[in-house]
Image 1 (cartoon, rainbow over the protein chains, first blue to last red):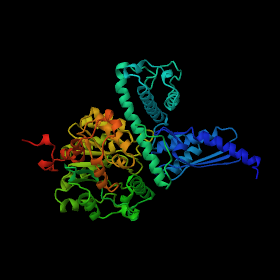
Image 2: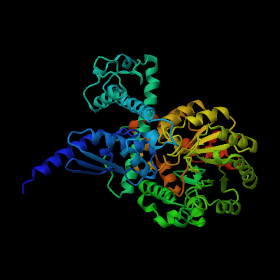
Image 3: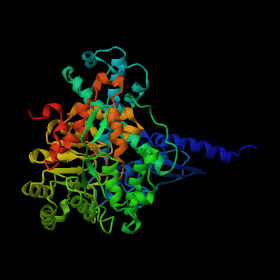
Image 4: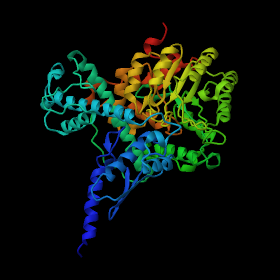
Amino acid sequence: MTATSEQLTDTRLRDAVWAALARVVDPELDQPITDLGFVRLCEVRGGDVGVRLRLPTAFCAPNFAYLMTADAYEAVAGLPGVESVDVRLEDHHDAEQINAGVAAQAGFADTYATEANAELDELRRTFRRKAHTACLERACRRLLADGWQIEGLADLSLGDVPASPEQSGLLRRRADLGLSTSPDSLLLVDDEGNPVPAEQVSLRLRFAQAVRVSIDGNAHFCRGLLATRYRETEHPGEEDTP
Amino acid sequence: MYTKDGENYFIVDGHVHLWDGSDDNCRNIHGHQFIECFYDYHRNLSPEEYVWDYRKFQRYSAEDFMHDLFDVGYADHAIHNSVYLWDFFHRGFARTEEAWQGVQQHPGKLTLNGTWDARDGEAGLEQLEKDAARFGLQGVKIYTAAWHGDSRGFKMSDPWAYRYLEKCRELGIKNIHVHKGPTLRPLDRDAFDVADIDHCASDFTDLNFIVEHVGLPRLEDFCWIAVQEPNVYGGLSVAMPFIHTRPRYFAQIIGELLYWLDENRLVFSSDYALWQPKWLIEKFVDFQIPEDMQSEYGVLTPDIKRKILGLNAAALYPTIKVPGELQLAEAVPV
């Protein structure tokens, strides 16, 4: 049996939609919603795309739930060949309100007119900073394992980090924060791009480790709860990084 | 008391519940979703042989409660924390009257903590006075994410929260257990943010702030605050069960906590009936930081475990009497 050209187009568009959804991350967990198992359904018919999202609990924070739903909507709506988008969050205490707000592209502050004072840009930035901190710690941990001394880290450039998952992870988070990704830029910078003085490196990395442990722990929880809630096998996540 | 390998451990379960999540108590879908969410936590992180059926989990008996905590759960003492969630449950989530009966029927075994909500105004302050007189309150449990009409929560740094903290001070209620939950107004802010604890802990240095589940999912923020505020403690509820499902991860949490705080400010709790204390205590006493992490985190000595499992909580609640032979060796007066 040969696929009709219509089916082929649907498949191709579906792949593109899935790839777009894979670029949407849970801001708290810093992992793609596709990898976390949050996309229950992704359906393409002609140019019409339907996406259904689900979360580990009915009480997941509504602001993050809104961000992921809105980000998924935007990621899909921007694709060539997409004529209509219907992204809906399911099984959440605020699903109705969030779905209506996202469909109307109302923005968070309007969707929660009486309960929110502002859009979620600052919240998003807070979690991008945490993600950068955690990724920087992973990269430094790798460098230390490779034989670098902690005293020397302050002088290193981004280009000194060998090609690795740690390097690509760090580059992405730097780009998210608007920090330089050029190989000759300093590796150890704060969230604003300022160099970390050598005498502060040790404490900063120690704290960064706590950030990383916290984010990883949250992800363990969420993956486990989602699997339990929907009676599925846990979606495989990143390996425990001791 | 729990004994293993010749070591004795005085056990205080720092956070337990006697709740009613039964269908007829649920006021709306949110009540159902709330207890279902609890049940998912229970099922996901408990060893299989400790998983209850849903009906029992919704509403277990007072006998189950006493049996699981004291007969098989090794507790010398347990602290019942009341959470009402009136917007979700007709009769309130906590079965305070039954817990109070337990306190009276089993002298020295149970402490009953009260609660307040910063949005209850003057009437709430009066109620707190009455509760303090009736129950002899030494502590309260505050659930900042409770819904209340149109509101989805409050902050511990709100002016009205300060009025309640002043009242606690006046009434001699020293221990403020704070639970950060997922919904809080305004919704454009991070609801799990523990920064408000920083404010109230600096302004009420004579009160103890026990942050439940050690600030998870904001462990790092909790650690940062606790470093600066010596009256901030970490309750280990919710973090404990990782000891079964992800022991290497548990090692990192406990390792971070011991690094940033110290062994005197961590308090064991099962969060019963979310998890059964029996297996948590057995596994914790058997637990050691994996060898490859010891250069970073050190090891858990029996004395550290003794403090976490009971002695630290007993230090916060002077009515909990620790027999001399169960104190740390150096703490016994000569």
